[in-house]
Amino acid sequence: MFSPEGTIRPGERTRINFHHRYFDNCTYEIPEIEIVQAPQNGRLDVETVVEIDFERKPSGCRKKEFKHIELYYTPAAGFSGEDKLIYRRLNGANY
Image (cartoon, rainbow, N blue to C red; front, side):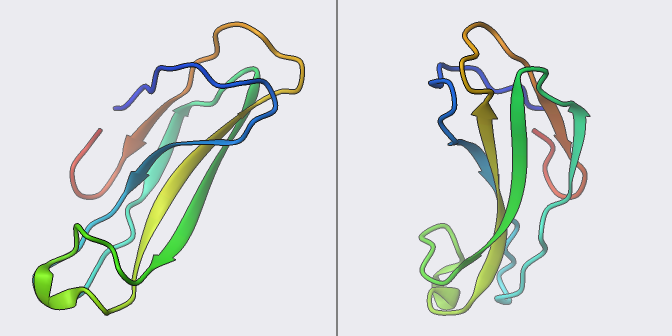
């Protein structure tokens, strides 16, 4: 499980993490995420993103299209304080 920590301004959408799974044969698997504990004072968005020139892909796959997910947290407008969210990656490495 992964529990991000840091300071984010109220109402400001911030990418808190991303996950990918690329294979040497230039294929990919979109990671699956389970929300264990949703934030109480904001919103968590999980988005699938198309990436073409991503430096962590296998070297022979640089110009091929891959997809990965990005996680964004947006605190509620006017919220100040501590919030907590926990998620688990279900396929591939767990964070």
